[in-house]
Length: 627
Image (cartoon, rainbow, N blue to C red; front, side, top):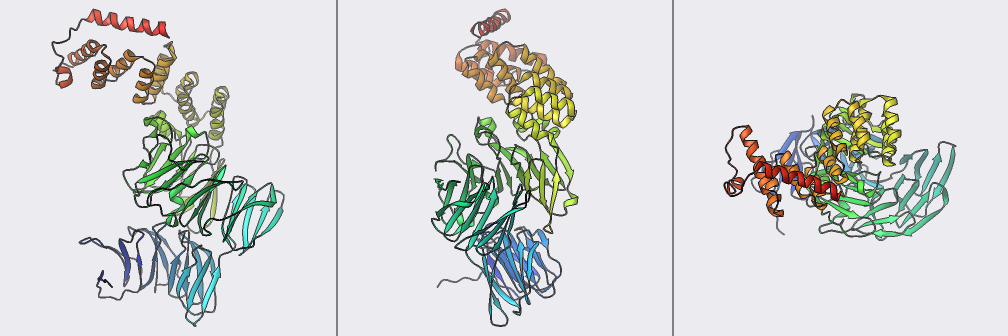
């Protein structure tokens, strides 16, 4: 058998763990933790992790987090760079065992006569005091529902996870036993008890449905009927993840992804090269009413997109490739398929937004924020909440990035997040209520203004008069800025003009009045695209409608000289116009011509100011006749 020495140390190595990609090894060295890369001549990453000897470490492949425990009677959670995410209170005895659940959402900690269940962020769900002596090793079942521990008194301890609690609107669901669930409607205090023939593995509640996965079957309940669930047999019998959307849900098993309707019908099973579903983590998979997004495990810069109902990639939408490693993705839930958006957070904790469908301009990745710790889309409208450094931020209209970047800061709500403690996590965003999980596990509810969601409803149904009345009544600049962006995106000039005037954007008001003065709807649409800074879209609109001259002239106004000349040469028209305006521009600044593309036409094309002015006038008249 081939063997090699990875590490030689002067101190005993009490514990070691493989990295997610099996190219790294984490090991202990006294009070230090060391990540050793297997590539030759690579520098190890090491840091002081505990005040006493470290006895146990574990590294989870799904969430890429590290946990450690030692003789200082504490357990700690780390990221791969050695940044401490959580440190426990002082325990009575040294930590003798520690182990991640397969899905990476929980971990177990063992000590003398102690077994503790913890969330991945570090806070404790429960503490048991069995008479077992020290628990020297802990291992999980493959479905993450049971724990076995090797005890100092010679026994093996078995534990089952129960009392998992889920909430959605006025319903509360609790896993009361290995095979039973209680459902309570807190609005009328009605409750139901659900019994299952097999052990419960996964439970998810949302969108008027409760989905329960056992070791062999999937049970689908609707909140209107708890007596007759839809039941179907699992393909593999080992479910790693369960995600719900408005019309369907996603089951992730050890070797496959399966999308099911709430009637129990299989809709699709997306696949791609190198797929490893068993290492999926909820932060890297997202579903919406019409799209599935999954980050590739082998290439962290790649995000795969799938259209619902089929197993093929979206038409004209190849996988999204980011410049850095992606650690979290999320699809918005509201709006039509054309409004589907994806946010991604990279390893630098920068957050980017992109549209799934639309033009190349809309599909480009635009940076929305930095230092993002956690994020959550609103369930009903396209609003986005995130914890950014020490602030809780809500983007009331993220699409403003593609409409008018200068309005981004005016459509955002900032709130000090110090009340939530260190490393808070946004867990829900329903209506105008935010659920934030503190580092100690407590759930804090916060609220945002209800008016932006009302404005979203008016904009979605094109009720611009009602939207204007709302903004006039509230008299809030943030609301006016949202309306300006929404109406500009919807090409409603009258509403946009008043909204921009309300936030003192006089240059935009003047430009909108200029647009309204143009009688051609096509030109208006192109000018509205320019208002949002989408030059390529504006040019495409004009060229598709045969307005070549207008497209050339737009580039001249923007001083895109090379593009203007390129269009003139391609369409064999107005080359002299481009050269004339370029010459006038250089004469204004008393500069010589240095552009080779323009130098090649020097003395070859006659530049007659009267003829060019006449040609331009003829083009305008031609547009009016055709329009």
